[in-house]
Length: 609
Image 1 (cartoon, rainbow, N blue to C red):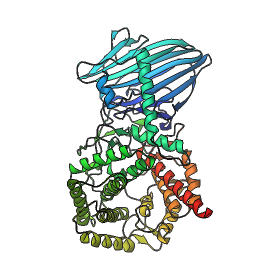
Image 2 (image 1 turned 60 degrees about the vertical axis):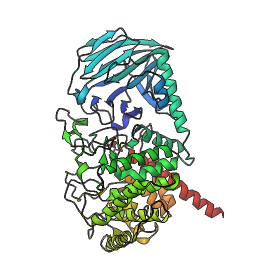
Image 3 (image 1 turned 45 degrees about the vertical axis):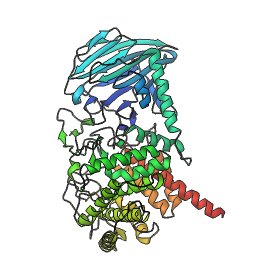
Image 4 (image 1 turned 180 degrees about the horizontal axis):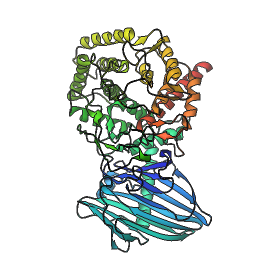
């Protein structure tokens, strides 16, 4: 099999960048030094030319894997006829105070292979292909334990206690380990002199122990104790991996162009930060006990949005850069020949009205729990965001799904515009924003509500619809009860839930919108996993907890063996599709777990009383 199923990958990272590791022990995707940097390994997007770094048995084997408990350290076990070997994969993580005391490479990746029973013949194959595989570098030996390749100012050192044979752009070593023996492979990146060599041996073992300790200490802050607590923590660990620590930004996924359907063209670069996901993300982090990460994300968001203020983009890079032009890498064939491979994302120039509600909702979510108030500058920013909503809410937009067709009057966008003004009103009432007359916001909010109720609800269908005065359905409408537009058990909300399940549903799965919807692209989408978790929340809030729990329990089994979710899923085969792992899906899973636990616990307390 040339291309492994997307669900066969695991992720490791250091809160700056991330790598995907296959079940066969091959690192098939890595961008350094940032999530959105040019790739060093990209075999997941081009099997022949993308480049990879594999450590695996050289004979037939079966493999299982897991994360070391409460960490992002990946452990893969290979079983062969002659013995069992175990591969450990991680990116060493250090606290800032440790970095000041210890000289380390700018970025590094560490692999340890050991035999735990019998003896196992092994092979390590190193094939770096920098700059999205546009470069085939020459690999040369620097010493018996270090090989090096260079691309401009970037220098990659691979250090090991086995000696590689180099041939042009590849390096390989074959060796056999008996029970109790182990070897290390440490890959580093530096783009300034002098380069620092990574550790192997006892020093590398120390790196492993410090990294395990870092993740376990971080995980100890998890406050959730409800059902599937281990899976909720795993999702939080994924969000931490997708966080760019220097800024607090959280990328949507560490990958680009993994297709929504193999062979299709719906392939997008998700290595950026979406405001659309803001309120959901902050709620998930805060509810789980990770207020520091939630606050850092809010701080990044307030900084990034000032760069384009008063308008908001739907996405930015990890430092708040707004210009993210989209281009195609025509030399890569794409995952399972799903071209094109894209870098950058043209959705950055779209107008999406819903992001204004998401930003204000995220700020309120975090500060009402953890803050004493806003300074005058932040108060001014929030007021000006509300004023943009007042000025622009009547305009058509591209909608939450970033459709590449003409702008339309999306009902979800109008509801989120209403939510933005509702949110800023509450902030004034709580004196978090001071000295502001809210009358203009109240009038606009009432006007939006009247418009949605009159033109956004189709009485023949008995449901809210995607477009004002339309008849198509959209799963984003499940958020109406979450933002308080109507009571969760309002008959119009219940009708919308049932209509969406009937029209867009396949058991526990939901499509985003109907196949007849014009989104400017050829048909061919999978079911969108976050929508299923939104359905769980909507049902739980509506008092239909048992339906919500049944769906949730089925969805738990949709993750891969490591507890990782993708963006989409094939409704027939159950194969994970799209960029992976997907932050929004893990956020949806966490919020659904919290909501279901709260409603079920509240119900049992009412029954006892």
